[in-house]
Length: 270
Ligand SMILES: [Zn+2]
Image (tube, rainbow, N blue to C red; front, side, top):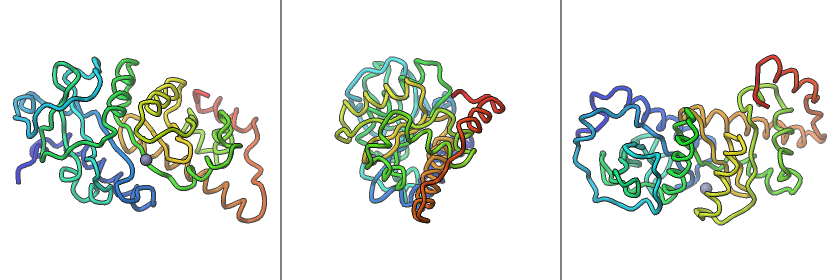
């Protein structure tokens, strides 16, 4: 079967990156059933011939108007699709859509009429926000990292930046590779407008990774691999904390002075 990825090596590489990350999410146990979402702005990989391709669906409403997305293209995980299936066949468990000129509708262009995730309006709102800020970030990821979610079952870690400071202090790489820390959003109904708005506010407070209490994380970065890396680094730190607690003691953590030194030497933003 022909694919939109045929003879488009850069686009294919970007979609294969999504498939690779989807496999990691499943292997890590962060993507039970159809859990999690991925949306990638692939506009930079779209060419003029793609614009002429017929849609495989009729126009569908986004549910909101997103003016920055004019002419944009996205790869989206499909609704009810599993990450472990996406890892084997990204164009059967996801689709490529283009935003119509009214910025309020989209159509599926390839390869199959796989309906995008029900989280599409909130993911697209984030991409609209990123473009409006001039951000180079093009990928958004939602997943359920076990240890990070477990942390949010304690009030202590829901305080602003309490989890950030603890996670950064477990191993120096955490601050180096997740330098903006972990935003915290209190529990809200999944898929709700309130949750989407609170996530945007947290991203706007200068976090790349936002924790949804008792649910999961939402991360953004330049591409899907980098978004995954930030979550992976944070969850590793949470695992180290838990390992120490399992050994029967509260981990000491790096000192404030050591963490400040990291920021000074590596030019970190916080
Ligand atoms: Zn979820």
